[in-house]
Length: 565
Image (cartoon, rainbow, N blue to C red; front, side, top):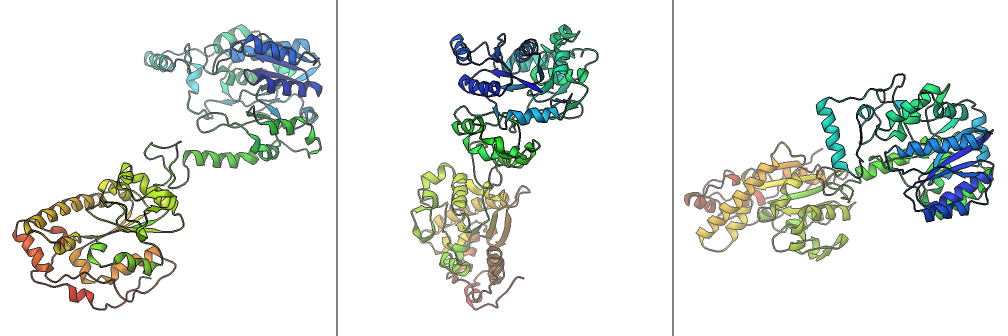
């Protein structure tokens, strides 16, 4: 059985010449169409390069803009040339100039010989399968498209909208049921001749000239009229991404292409020297014959698409950034935020670090600098302790810190004195564990020196900031794990919440807390809170701390260990 190839070329003509020579020398006639937009000089060079090959012909040239009728016109003219010049050809394979044979020609010929009168072309109805990506399906057959989608996008969209508003619909020719599919097919001589010599050819061509992307519907529709047996699949390996753009194969895809067992692959990078060398050398002639199975590599392409669209959790990439909500998880892994603990307990960072066996940061969003664990000025991933650099984008600072320290849980302090721009981001992050002692900022104000009127104003300012922050944490949009105690109720039994927090940080290593961290000296704190009330400032977030009560002795005594199971 003789097999012929039609090649549609518009770029990398030297690669097209290599492939055409390979097929022709294997006994397969080749008809080449070169886009009329290619310079005459480049076209003439291709003709000269293949002048010594007997079974190569060139068809009349057409402009082949994407989605235009020119691609169908070029294919029809090349088909007529193939049928007229090579009467021995029984199967015609449509390929592009960027295609590359993956298996010897004799294997493809044997495969077709075992399946006589079978046309291999993807052909699906728009009513049954809505597989188009980012485009029209049924409407491409009922509307007119005089404007280029790529060159005149605005006019294209406006004209489509106008036709929809006016209810304009084109009539589909009688006897045709619109089908869609891949441009690349392999048809029998009988089917291709019937399409080319169809008595209604003029009518069909006139109708499809005004169809959008007719190269994906002309042959796919007419093959259903003239073929006796259609196998709705292409023998060409051609993969597309989520935007409908073709995947390009490079040298490092060599083993992937071999595993597919497909006969031809598209689209090959012109500089993939190793692929062209390996597949055009004839070295694969001894490979075992197998059924073409692009499904073998579909899983890898699905993973690649998912990685491109969703990415890795907590890693922000150019393909998604800065569109909010496109990220696959706000951060890479869980982290813990402590609010008010460093105010209430002395040297809380060191106590927590020793308890969980990891590093604990101070206030990462403090106004003066980033207080990394151990006083570091440069942290993982070259993160600087500069407040100015951090505040340029606090969200990306935090996500970078979590990403750069994967495998190590990050714990840090936060409070009303810190940059509050990060509040919503942490609240919406399922990876965040936020523990808050409201009103604990009053302890630091209590221990500060200065005029009482100044302390009262500072207390009022901090309470306003914390109130806004608490409102965010209690929002119905919150996805973080949030625990909130006011200062008074936390002081009643500090061991229970501390034990719960530690167990959540290290769930696989439950440990009993022998004692709480050392509490700050709160002698006179009750009188201070009452004085704030007397001066007109109501410290509502502190809780109920009665006048004159000294909470320090009660909380500093050794408490009974509490274990959460």
